Amino acid sequence: MDTRAFKLALNHSDNYHRQGFGHKAEVAKVLDSEYQSSLIQEIRANNYLLQQGDVTIKLAESFGFCWGVERAVSMAYETRQHFPTQKIWITNEVIHNPSVNQRLQDMGVEFIPVIEGKKDFSVVASQDVVILPAFGASVQEMQILQEKGCTMVDTTCPWVSKVWNTVEKHKKKNYTSIIHGKYSHEETIATSSFADKYLIVLNLAEAEYVCNYILNGGDSTEFLTKFSRACSAGFDPDRDLQQVGIANQTTMLKNETEQIGKLFERTMMKKYNPAELNKHFQSFNTICDATQERQDAMFKLVDEELDLMVVIGGFNSSNTTHLQEISFERHIPSYHIDSAERILPGNAIEHKPLGKPLEVQSNWLPTGKVVVGITSGASTPDKVVEDAIARILEIKAAALV
Ligand code: SF4
Image (spheres, rainbow, N blue to C red):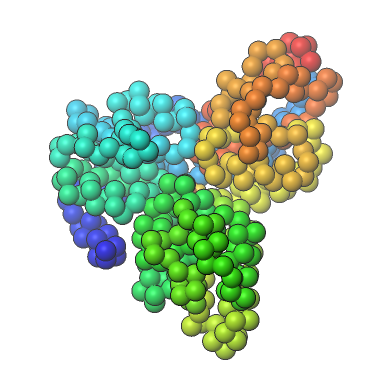
């Protein structure tokens, strides 16, 4: 399929909207009242520090809603306002935050149902409106919706679109896109749908395996088994790894994406000699600024003296999980929660340890003085961070700890 031509045609369609509907100012007031926090503004103004009783809260210098998420949520609210009576669907969570998604559902925005792992678009009628989320939708999904003739409101973040454009460039030159990401993540599913040939690598270890194959060959059956869910149909590692371009899921760890890019660059230089590099390797910087800023701020925060970290964000949020990984690597006790309600009465917390299911931990706040580092993922409103801080302060003030 000519995905570029499809997108161009879509951009010119009257049923397709990539901007708001002129209600931005009104919606901004509603969003401020629902998601912003005066306490967080005060803490920001106080050098990201709050001191109360035995508790010191240190906030990361960059956290929470990124502009891409703010834009998507704002467009979703505008859509409701602009189409007050029409049925509105969303192809997936608009962002990875349970409270925001619940709020949208309360406003009558419904998720496309999933039956046996597949989205059931038969529920969408031509007069309906369908919102595409911040991390995009696959080109096949957009095609289905276009054929239905429904109205599409595309909130895909421009940073994600930039990656899609990169993948288009790879395709034009017949390069295989090496996508650093999670093959089951919606953004990576959407990105790979624009590629002709692609291979998704999760981390540096997988990239090393692929580069070793490029240099030394190997067992293609083993290769295809390892990447069975992470490569394009008909992928042949002996044929399709001679020209590669790098792309990424925008919320992966920045350093790892860079390392993977450099590893493939060195590998292609070694295999084909440096003078031929441009014929075998392409790389563009597609790391999103917001992800980079939040990760940099987290690296700075974990350099400080902290007793523990609280990382707030959806459990399926990739960028939040990466923030959690940073504190895990520094051996700081770290609690990933998706809402303040996970901080339970008494001194207990229901949290998600890295790579494990939810668990409840008692006595998580130590007695006496405590320094708590806090950050939140790009999909988390400040209001949720405020509520979590309030609960921590309550527990300590009640002399429960
Ligand atoms: S994290 Fe980056 S790519 Fe993702 S929505 Fe925010 S600004 Fe866009």
